[in-house]
Image 1 (cartoon, one colour):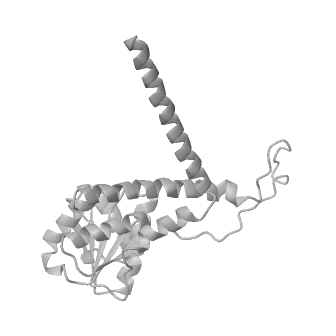
Image 2 (cartoon, helix red, strand yellow):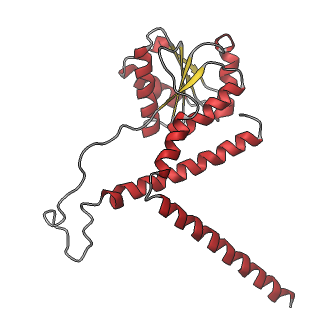
Image 3 (cartoon, helix red, strand yellow):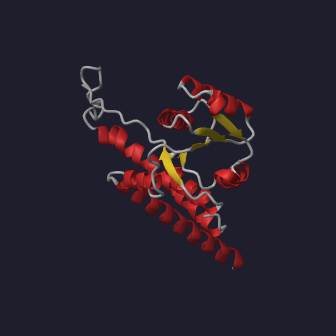
Length: 236
């Protein structure tokens, strides 16, 4: 009797789990046909305030290995800010990975940022540690004008975290991707597409936008969860 009751209880919870995950998946797919994921992602990149003018200090946060799309974008944005502010020091906040550090310094050098302008702080394994490391190493710079370079989805949390440890004039320099403006439609028949396969050659919404927005949804969901975690810990 107890076994059958436990089995029924387990099946009931399993059905609820399937219903919940199915509902979430359906909502995500529906949202992927709207502009909501784009706006949610852009909000994370801009809500904390955007850097302007010529900052005195450029902080660049690492996120993944090199070469990778996110790191290359951060290097590109950092180099553009460094060219705009030739007197600004560039500080790379990294984990203790000399390969990553060397690769980012080399990439910045190819974009015109001399290694003499670059300072490495290699003790931060997450945003909180990077902020604490920077606050200690740059204690005399807490009130300087700072541009913080990181991925768009990470910008809001990073700014709040750095402000929490004492940086007072820090603003975001989010590394947004460069938009592609080419027309990606093609001729299904001319390329040898089979007649019984649906022709989606003219639908960039199905071929690209849907999947890109689903990726943005997962990215934003992860970041909003991280924001909640940081908030609970009092790090924001």
